[in-house]
Image (cartoon, rainbow, N blue to C red; front, top):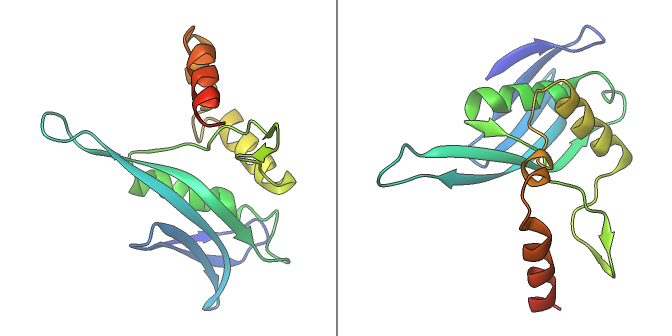
Length: 142
């Protein structure tokens, strides 16, 4: 559990539970949450690390734009070994793989610009095989 003060001066309690969901509470009422998709890397010969990726996010009206989601991400960095958002390729043909809301995309960009989280697209810029691998994936799955 961690206590923070939001941009409007309210004391907010943050909790990340065993279900890998970060929740924000004000006066005992839930005002926001980010559910994380967590992967474990490593194993027998290396130290296991836990990587968290925000999956679903919601902050209720009246608490939006007060820094609560950003604080949940900061807290997640204390709980997990690394945190990053998924890429947003938008709509590809008739599929909408990952697509952020306007508010979610603003949070993602802010976290990446301030180096709170890594930009997942940076890992693919120097990978010459990425386009070929993506085309192969697409052909196998359509």
